[in-house]
Image (cartoon, rainbow, N blue to C red; front, side):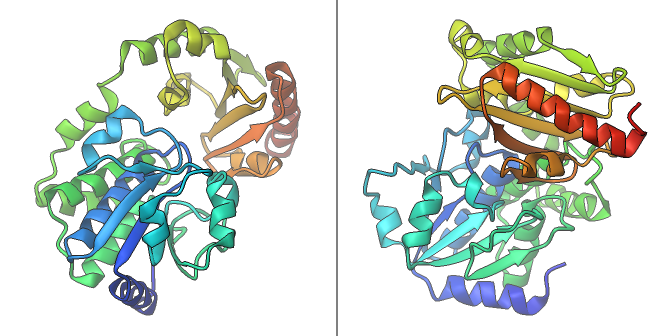
Length: 334
């Protein structure tokens, strides 16, 4: 839990700022989008200017969270809201490698930075950091901050926080789901949030392109280590032939976790720059964050990611070697 003096310092920093820019990590997920939308809308409700800037494409299923289209960071382009901001708020991130080229801009900037995050991976990017690694989602921290500040969580703000928590807990089924998650969710529902409508928007809203991409991924399924670890992959041609984009891979990795006895899963995605994006999931015993850290990645014990050197076959072999070490540690090499 966050100490009251930390929340007070964060509130003072926001109150002393007039133009605020909120951003998050690349490939923004539900916690990133929900937390960013909630804090920006709450700040606007206090009569201040707040803009949201994203570092990569916004998945369509999160568009309903935003009052207006977020701006996009382009390294070679001057962005007025970024130049004018006297405070940068980072939500759901405190790691250089998850900010792409914006990390370079941030290092050269003299602007104040406020961080709201729940990850263990911490590069100390903030002048003030509101961090709670026991929180199931950054959305939980945002909820607690709004309560401390005495700011009303209006209907859209409450819905954004609910998206943040429900998505990062896998709709309250992942191991990070705790009593605190349910307590906050119950209060949000009590304020008018409709879980059935949010679920439909998030998980029953696949485009034909995304669904076809999923079938390609599932057809690549391989089981290793006595059927206890699943590896799937997507090649550039899979995206091209189905008219899909990289943003449509979010959460697809979880489809194979329905297999009985699975300890973990990985999804390898071939990128145009030659690298391979590796998403990792664990059912409990394997610490996938340690695997991701080998390549400058990060995340949680049960969900992490990193970029591996290509080509795809090379990345797959590297991953298998790292997984072998993990299985030897936890299962005696069986």
